[in-house]
Each structure stands twice: as C-alpha cells, then as structure tokens.
Length: 231
Image (cartoon, rainbow, N blue to C red; front, side):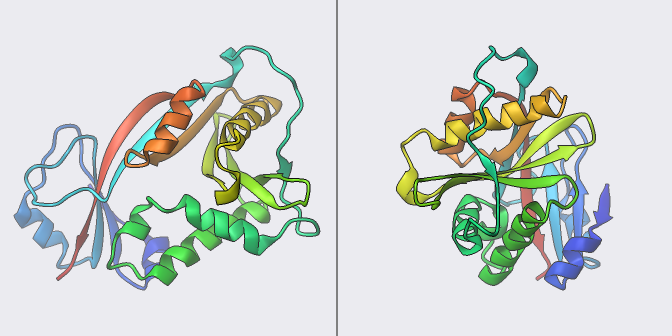
C-alpha cells in the first residue's frame, strides 16, 4: 500500500509517499517505476530485506520496549529535569540533538540537503521544549548547568511512552549519563500510570543497541527502510 505523506511533502517541497509492504511481499522494479512517475521520493518499508530491487536500506529501524512496571523497585528520585529556557541553553541542547541524529536516514541520504536534516531535528526538539502533542524534553546537567545529556519523551495516549530522542554530550560520555536517562524515563513512565516504554533506533547504531539491551529493553520488531528517488 502506498500513501502520500502530506507533512513530509510540504517540508521537503517534494511529492513524498510511504510504500508499506505486507508480510513477505517483494516489490517489482516495474511497480516502483510506476509509483515514481507520481512521487519524487518514496519511503519503502518492509519487515524483511528486499531482494527484488537493487537497493541498500538507509535505515534498519529497530524498536525496543520495556515494561517498567516489572522492573525492580528503585529510588523514586529523578535526576533529569524538564528543559528550562531560563537555566538551560537551547543552542547547547540543539548541538546534542543533532548528534542524536547521526545515524538517521535523513542525515545519511545524500540527496537530502544537510540543512533540511538539521531543520527537521530542530522542529522535533522545539516540539519537546514547547511540550506539544505530549512531547517533553528532560536534561541532566553538570554543576555549571551545562547539558550532559537529554531525553525527549512523548506520551502516546495511555498505552505507552515513546523515547523520541536521546543523546549524551561528547564530553560527558562514559559516565553513565545515558543509563541514568533511561532509568529516569522508566520512572516518569510509571508516574504517568503507563507501564510500557518504547524506543526506536537504527540497527547500525551499535552503541545505542548495547545501551538498551544493557538496561533490560527487548527487541520488539525490525523494519527495513529504503529511499526511492525519481531520476
């Protein structure tokens, strides 16, 4: 099934669609060319590698989940604090936010201008700062109020909390900041009376994968995403 993506189309000033394959479906080159007569860019998504088209996936999207209610009880103290414009630097946060998108397909696809990738992540960050659509940014700072790391959470109705973005500042790595952010996220999840915490990352991001597994997250699903461009 193929569906036009209005927001993406407006943002990139292109005719963009998502083509979601079902089960073991393999697309044909003829069908792809037919769709590319109508669309400039197609996100082709499948739950398995695609062999019928000579393309390499830009993103192997992995979803990890944890039932926070089943974790051992721990201290109720949450070290992460909501982002506060009067204390924290938005520019400093943005630098770390952009680092979190290093493995994003919007950064890896060389046909997407660098400034559009940065603009996209800036929009996501601002949604969290302004607490739009259930999204909120939490930060861990050092004694100088410099941001050591951040996590952006979104409450999806009453069913789950989603980690939208997470990253640690370069000079704060190796100090357990990322694990503390995840611990805080599980507590925030429970404080909202929601048991499930979920995160989507890239399979290529080995450090992130190790982080989630170390913190008791379990793989839920894997999805292969390709970008098909009109020539």
